[in-house]
Length: 114
Length: 117
Image (tube, rainbow over all chains, first blue to last red; front, side):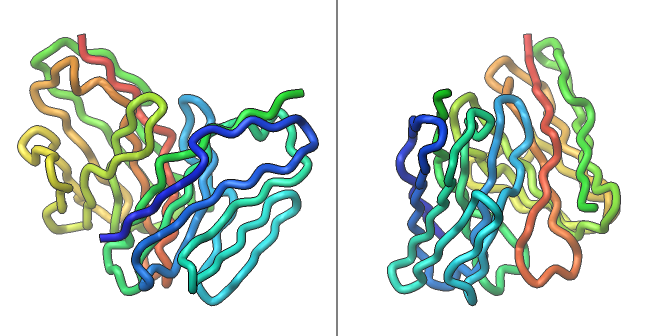
């Protein structure tokens, strides 16, 4: 099956700085890469996703890049704010998987200091 | 759109009792629902994949007789933790995949905090 590695496990930045979280995946058949934000005790919330036919996607302060050749994708958060503090998970899903299973990274605890 | 509810949001039970958790897709039909378990400061661990009208597919190491899953309709899946013990205490989260989606987008429920005394 697919294996998703996520780094770093913790990330601390000053408010206003940028934050980058990186993930790698093992199966070249994966074609869907979502990013989730999870606050303590809450559900994971989809913040952005990218499909394999696109190299980059941006939504205001959040962007995701995908390098299919290298099999890695990254989350970029610019102008960070304290409310961005949360755990972020990347995930990958296999093309043609009728069950649609997501393979998750281990998560990154992002802390934004005011 | 794409709202998933979960009930109850938290439950405390005595050791040896059974607990049922419901997962509902409120505004879409979900052929497939997923059940995850999450320990503090850890990632989501997939327990089983539930398909409407068929038996659930369990991940390796998950006891199917202990974690009973039923997906009786396109909007409801249930997870029953049978004979619960303190080590079953955890945060259980379901997710649903919309029927007919070309990609594997999942929508998560709010989770159920289970505490077994």
